[in-house]
Length: 417
Ligand code: FEO
Image (cartoon, rainbow, N blue to C red; front, side, top):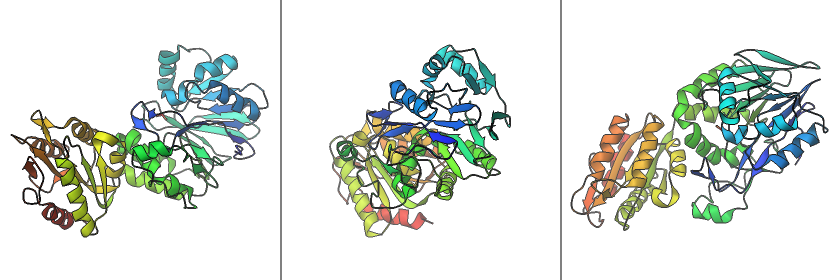
């Protein structure tokens, strides 16, 4: 892989092909990267590090691109341990390195790694001169997605090192930039297990299209709660001339920057398309039959939909489709007079992400007393979703006589834009 981005910027990131779950909860059927970069002036700066267990590979990348010379500065844009875990390794390897970061991050560096020496605290708008005509400017983008997060901008290279903003799941092959980056496809077993093997259009020539679904899943899973803050960050970056986005996850964007910014803009404004994200959990298959019947009814009406079994697939892929479609249809059996736990967990995540501009319907089986449908509607109403159908609970087994999914699909169709 050619890792030189420009005469002065090098990609020193890591492909993680083995990790099962990001943040120990989000599946990685296409892997993930921890991106890091070297910028060379008279002095050399390293931007962010990588996850632990990659220390040897990471140090080799740095040595290769810095010709074995010590690194002068470590810029810490973000302190989540997938990027900060190797700070102690770097400070040990380069004892004279100066950490450059903001006060909140410095406090976290102390708390996580007990490092307090040789830290230069910078504030919004400050600049670091690397010599040879190269500067790094710093802008705070709090809650994208931790409070200490900042971006670094190199005006001479018109390059923004954006932290998690514009990031994506998916390890990268062939090259780091969107000129040739392709997503890692080898873990077929996991793609089949999560029923996501068609999420990546491998025949496309567009790196953006290839990564789009994994970018949406990354945003919805990790950053989705902070749409307002992402909007503020986008506003701040709006005044900068940007030729290159170097995020902490996924490809480096050069050719398809407009598409990436547009997608993040839309997602952070909760702008969606007409369609239905159907989610369900089912103990004995009755609520599942209702979910499939709704999918069939939507298909007959040419209404786009996605169907997710939360009990087997988890919530990760469903959250992506909540950010894609403007209707959520949730199916849950009544369980201990409550919502079935995988569905309850998903709905909690919907409210936690302050989902806006969505319509909601629910359905599900009960045996002796129905409570789940009412509770799902109450929960989503409190979360400010628009409930467009009152009650679609049914006793015991599913049949269209008990719960008419064609009628429900008609209600949904009447509410689409
Ligand atoms: Fe990739 Fe918020 O760390």
